Image 1 (cartoon, rainbow, N blue to C red):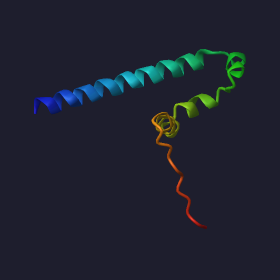
Image 2: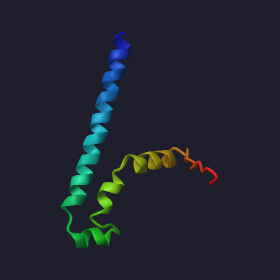
Image 3: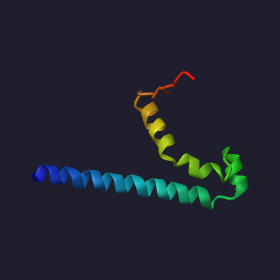
Length: 75
């Protein structure tokens, strides 16, 4: 029982740390002026997209070698 509680708290801590890292990166990108964003190939409207869940999941899958395949239905 204690192991389950410790594991759950560990997962919460990791999730919070990940969220804080993403929030700091988001804030840092938002603090850049438009010219600086253009220098790195971004526009201000790209910033929320970069931090969307779909992009994070795809990047994680690519990093671990598990690229997701899009399932397409026949029309």
